[in-house]
Image (tube, rainbow, N blue to C red):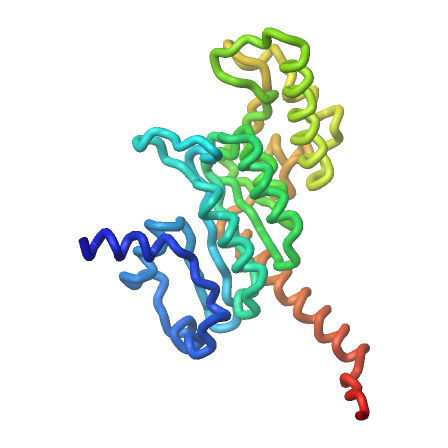
Length: 267
């Protein structure tokens, strides 16, 4: 009973801003401590600090789980876990930036787009890196970051929206799929350097996959197509994130200096 209660409590994400006395704990805690290991197991994320920067590391793996619970043997990323984490990260002043590690086969389209839209709308510096694979709806998640990386050996599969094993029986269903695909294409083109026409051409390619339509892009190919910004490793992604954090802090200092001291109203 005690273990069950502990697990239920650990699923709730606390905003560190509620505990002003915890800054010392945040600074002194080790990423490999027992508590932090439990957090990784529960939420797939961890906060790291190297003396100058506080970075939240978020992993998106397996399938993106949406409104339907997937079988227990599937590795999943639950959007109801990720969304509140993103809100807490954006509101927490002590967190300087977000690093997103992606190795996903795709999943629920609307859940993936919801997470991607939240990431794209955040003010915090965000860097993503595709490791292994960033397929299907994983593509919008990768390009939603301010800067994106892909490992040299990683790949991304561009394909149209579909429902496995179902036939499009009526024109209204086809129109629904077409509009959903357009939402994905528009988001990807607006958050990367690939034109909509080129993305659609890659998605509808019939000459590469034997039993499907689409295109597989490996590391260099994804960069050459304008989908991802750079081929790189974890250290490259971290260095880029640190530079973005420094640039944002410098911009905030200049803005504060330009605004001058706040004037107090006279009663």
